[in-house]
Length: 132
Image (tube, rainbow, N blue to C red; front, side):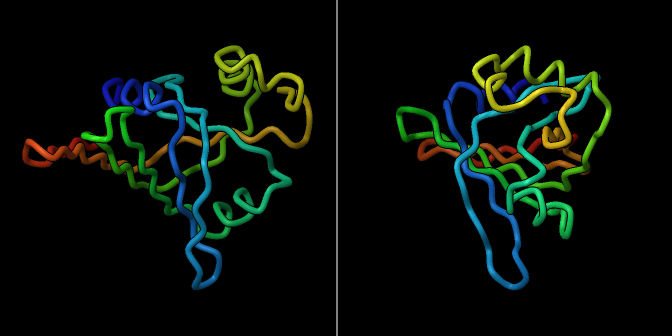
């Protein structure tokens, strides 16, 4: 899990895919961190992405390193965690978001991966999969 987090963080941004009815939706994201042994992301409850995740928690992330030669695909189910502690943790690790989010507002949403599977790819090596 640590390797997955570090790879995604080093990419700077990643793309999160959700399902909206029968239509896939993809958008850039930047938050990812480990809290209490789980991989978390953060968004706002008022956003369509949040509504899509609550309707169908199965998502996929794709992130490519800056060289363009390696990438990871991470799939799993996102689960909302309404506790204050993981919100504080995420905002401490992404202080630039504090102007838009607070651990005490009704909008900040943190979600962790359940039944996650990450596959690392490159143009020069066979794919390698880890599960957590």
